[in-house]
Structures are given as structure tokens and as C-alpha cells.
Image 1 (cartoon, rainbow, N blue to C red):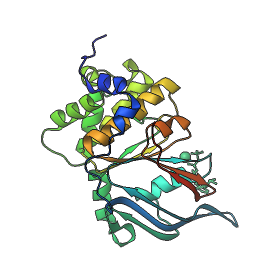
Image 2 (cartoon, helix red, strand yellow):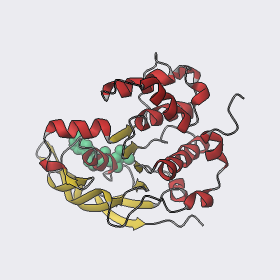
Image 3 (cartoon, rainbow, N blue to C red):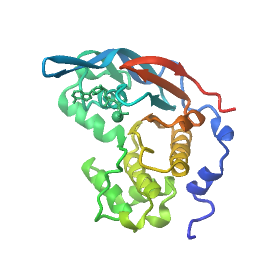
Length: 259
Ligand SMILES: Nc1ncnc2c1ncn2[C@@H]1O[C@H](COP(=O)(O)OP(=O)(O)OP(=O)(O)O)[C@@H](O)[C@H]1O
Ligand SMILES: [Mg+2]
């Protein structure tokens, strides 16, 4: 085992959940990273209308790990896409960093997506022929970063505990390590917000737990806000905020105590 004993990976793995539960230092009351106001998203399927989201409102403060839970079809992906500006609500408004998305020009939205938001998907979506560090550098190139890409990429890999694996290709990495490359890629541009759609969906439960602990570590250490969609009950042990969705509506909002 080559891992450095003091790497964040080790620190994360060894941090008991209740110790990781300190209030994030940068959370200010009233500062919401995301505010969703009376949002509906209606899909037209033939002559039928399908309401993926119905008059849904939520607020996600800065510096928290928020989980969107709910069974298949409850609207989790639709909501993440709308928060990230990848889809538009049929009705209602989304405020990102205090600003209404509907008022933004396409260019501005693209700029925010590249610089202030990181996306993580269930299937990792990393390039199979690129090494870990090259995958992260590619994201920085797409974001238009011209200087210090290698240095920034290596730092992001270190945060996720993959420093020693920087030159490995995806097939030499486990599923959890590949997902951590995808998380490093999302982190590399120093976003304010990471949106993750079932990031543990393809992982075994032990590896899934490591990814959730890593998300919590990133939130607490880097002050980033993370919104993740998941089916996994384990998320209650890590999230500051859990939103239960059912039929495109908020069924329950909880602040788990991690006792
Ligand atoms: N492009 C689309 N066209 C028509 N209906 C859609 C479309 N995308 C989603 N829906 C519908 O909207 C609802 C919410 O879907 P969504 O993908 O947001 O659910 P989800 O909670 O992410 O589910 P899962 O856990 O399976 O990923 C579902 O009823 C779905 O069938
Ligand atoms: Mg989904």
C-alpha cells in the first residue's frame, strides 16, 4: 500500500462521523447558495403532461452537504439539472448565489457553470485513455484556465486522497477511485457548488460510504456547498440537510443530528 498515512483519504477514512459534524465555519445565516422558488417542470409526453416537479421550493445554505432523497421518478435529477442551469423550469424561479437564473444571458450561465459549479455523475464519465491527472487537467482546460493546470489538478487529486494515483489510468483504478477522479475534476476549478447525481449509485456500500465521507470532508474543509441526489439511507449520517422528494414535491426536510 503506497498511500501516505497523512493523506486526506486516510484522514477522511479515520474521522468518526460525529467528529466531522462541526458547523461549517463559513455558513452565514441568510446566505443561500441555492434558492428554488415555486418551481414546476412539466414534460409534454405525447398529449399527456408529466409533472416532474410541482410547485417545489427549497433553500440550501452555503457550506452544507445537502441530500435529495426520494424513490425513482420523484424528480431528483430534474431538480439538479434545473439548479445547474442545464434545464429550465416551466414555472417558478431559481436563485443561484442570490441571482435569478431566468434573468441571465446564456453566456453568463455558461460562465457560471464552468467556474462556479462542478458536476459529478453516477457513471463517473471520465476519459478512459487519460490518466487521473490528465482527466482533471482536461476540465481545467475546458474552463479556460491557462496557467498552472497541472498544479491545480494535482492539488484536487490530493484533496480526494489520490495524489499517489495521479498517473494511473482509469482501468488501473477501483470504482471508488474513479469516482474520486470525477470528484477531483469537479473540485479543480474551485467551484462554490458541486451537484452530484447518485454519485454512489454504482459503488458497493463500503465505497459509497467513503465517497459520502469525502463529500462531507470537502464541505467542511473547502467551504463548498454540495447537493447530491441519492437513494442511499447512509447519507443521513453525513448530510447537514436531507430533502425528501415524492412526486416532484418536498415531502420532508430534516437536519440529521449525527449522534
Ligand atoms: N425528458 C423527459 N421527458 C418526459 N418525462 C421525463 C423526462 N425526464 C424525466 N421525466 C419524468 O419526470 C419524473 C422525474 O424524473 P427524474 O429523472 O427527475 O427522477 P429521479 O428522482 O431522478 O429518478 P431516478 O432515481 O430513477 O434517477 C419522472 O416521472 C420521469 O418519468
Ligand atoms: Mg435521477
